[in-house]
Length: 115
Image (tube, rainbow, N blue to C red; front, side, top):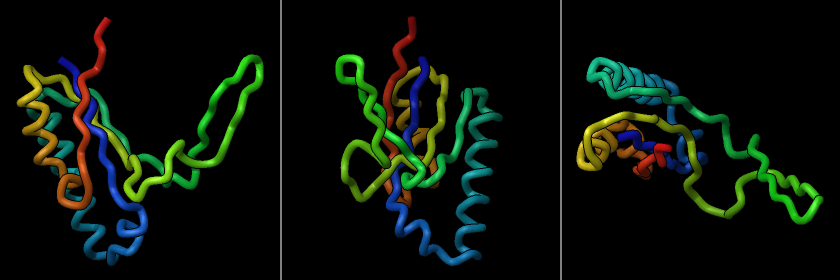
C-alpha cells in the first residue's frame, strides 16, 4: 500500500540552522533516502521550496481566485514528502519515525487512495 510521508517543519527555525549543522541534516536525509531505496519501498520524494513561493487556488462559480501562500496560518509548513510503498500502516509509521524531519518537526502519514 502506498503512503505519503509529509514533512512539516518551522521554516524560520530551519532558516536559522548553522551551515555545518545544515550539511549534517541534509546528509541524514540523503542516507534516509538511500535506506528507503535499498529497502525497495521508495517511490519518490522531494524537498519543496519555501511556503513564500506557494499559491493557493480556489474556484467560485466561473471565477478563479489565486492568493499567495498556504490556505491556513500555521507555524509548521509542508517542507517535503516521501511516497513509499509498504506492507502496512505500521511499516509506514516506522519509516516516518526514521525520517530526519521527525526530529525537527512532524511527519504526517497518510494512505494514498488506490484506484
